Length: 167
Length: 127
Image (cartoon, rainbow over all chains, first blue to last red; front, side):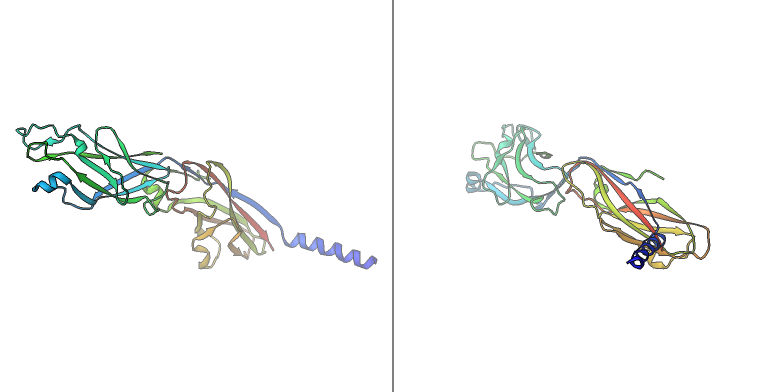
């Protein structure tokens, strides 16, 4: 019995001697600021809506997937659309009809409901934080123009503004 | 030791790997015994509701006056489990220095804005 105890004590002392340890550290940190970016590309470069038949004037023209939108955001986001002016801009001042920008409507491709264009921002899509490869952060937008028969013939144009904001 | 903080503001800050050159130096004094150096990362403070994984760092040896084999000059991933940084047996009793770059993996856009603090804990064992 006395022999066993002395062996144990020897082993403990040896271990201590063989495995001296020291611990130290460095302290990295990340300061992540809010970030949102929106990239809108014309997927269909033909931006002319040519109303050359009564049928087109009555029913409107839809360009499916006209815009490709890519979002990178570290906050949940909303994409809004608006126009810079309440009315379309005639190419020639002689066409003085006031065509409201609401003759244009937009929607996220695949959804049913259209959002009429106006100077007030209207939501067309939302999503979660993530890069452009996150599901829902890259999407297409359809554009529809339905002026009807009430306006004088001519060439009119309009700016469409895409805005991203935190949800 | 220099500041080991990075600010993420521009798009490229989030998307590319970022390096702090000569981020830290490890000093050893040889005693004719083998040294084992290991490292692991720990998330210490977090002013956010989400956590960034702790395996977002690499360290890379850039310069040393010790005779180390080439494998220890490769970038080494750091995670919450102790990783071997080097095993070294000095042949004389002198000071050895090891200079390291600290590499941050791209954080992407999955993590909410906030401040994230880490410790990289080095454990030196003599044998």
